[in-house]
Image (cartoon, rainbow, N blue to C red):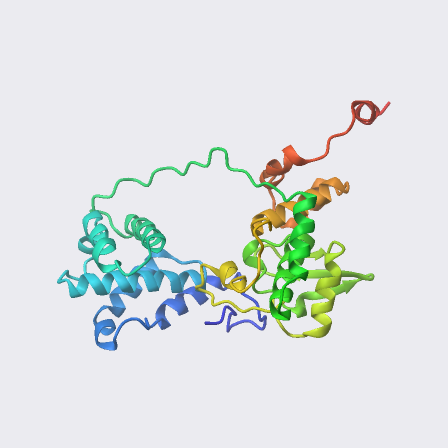
Length: 321
């Protein structure tokens, strides 16, 4: 299912019309896992539920419809009426996870249960759901890669046996370490987004955090080579379905990652990119603009790793006398 908005000329997701695209995705969704005779009686009810959850883009719309269609179909076959206050109760959801979703792996069942509990709280008024507990993220931090870890990641990317895996891994590292993209931005970028401005390779990032980012060396060479040798393609050389929640795993499923290779995390690549700019003396406001952020939160994670100035150098800078 395409992420492009049919009302716009842009080939990328249109933020202004994302809600319209999501609603169309809900209305056009037909589950492949259900027979037509099982889907038809519940289709309108299920779509009404999905619309009430207000998915903000087509990928989330498809995920919502896939999850709702499964639980509603199971409940309908089990004899429950098409009544959200009867289906989306704690007891029914727990029984569905134990019986109706028994074919799923344990992590998948845990994810589906969490999704359905969240959906149920939004969809019902009488069902006995406790308020969702506040999320606690004490101690959460983003740790940039060290210089040695970056060197090892780049070395591993050059040692892949196939050109396809080498390109994918090198492109992922270039977008993370050289451009600092958000993880969800990397998938849609194509060679059409690569531009040269005053002799420097840049990437134009569309969407909610639209901006143009110069590519830090040596990663500009990777991006430039991909644009020159494979025009019109995605920079990653990989197209993932919009509903795929495991895109990174599927991108790297055939990559050869030795035991001593640092675990590859896209948020750590982005943090490493930002820290490199801090170390190079790029002003904080400029880093925030390039990163597509408007708060200091990300930079707060980097504070423990940022360089500090010797007292003898800091004194005259602070006094300015």
